[in-house]
Image (cartoon, rainbow, N blue to C red; front, side, top):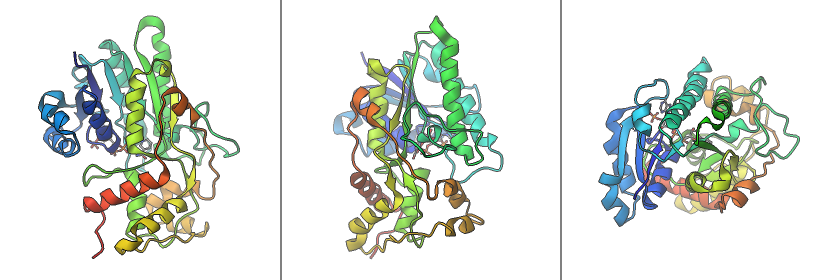
Length: 350
Ligand code: NAP
């Protein structure tokens, strides 16, 4: 008998990679979207990336239902009959809102809506997409960060998005504690770093924005920022493994490779795309420049607290407990760049 998995935010970059892997593994997938009319569009994107067998089964194996994280409507029906839930949806906007509650409330209350509905429907396990945003922000970078660490939401150096991810994950674990032994449902949390890897269509998540800017030479040089990257295909595999690996129960997992300077990504792009006519900037942007640019550029404001910061993370747990074998920086960077050219996100050079 085929099992049904609910995937929230089926329009999203990570969610669609999860759905592809679930369909290939023979699961039935129900996705949620805020706009109910997007089912056909999502199915068209998935269809282009599925094997012949999974594509033929798409009409019976995949459906989209309407649900918004800011409303109770639709969640009970969405989880009904599902054995697993991948709760991936969360606001991930290109710039910080005037009021941080615009991100915090949907992220936190939306996670609680999904968990409450899942518990009432006797879902076996919820896998929630958190982020490294809930691990090392607003903290001194004086040690190697692990799953034992939490971002400090009281810090004045933490942004609205990082707060929303931290408070949503905290709320989810608190909710699970409140259930005690009254529910058989358990929770696993995946905390991805900066997600790179192939786009499936022309729409791209905010995580591709920096690659796009570098490819378009919209930045003159590369800021001194360290990131913990991961390939979207590995993030999806981690979610699928987290559904069924028994020992994962009640645990959070950093999902990233070792930290890299952003300039390492630019150097890979330069090597990969130079012969195609791209002039990739690889110089170092002096640290004093970014605060000035941030005065008018909201996206630069988002990364300001990261400039010149060290970053060391330990991601061995996801390899040992879930058995994930993550791809390296070159493969995920080249795949994202190639897909941006393929789908016309970045124009090919003549
Ligand atoms: P994405 O492509 O922008 O997807 C975000 C998804 O969340 C979209 O499906 C969006 O739906 C949905 N969403 C936003 N607000 C919602 C609301 N009020 N109600 C229902 N759905 C809502 O981003 P992504 O990169 O795939 O991110 C997915 C998850 O991974 C997020 O939780 C994000 O925080 C987390 N994450 C991402 C990265 C990364 O680098 N990409 C790293 C760590 C963690 P609409 O299409 O309707 O807007």
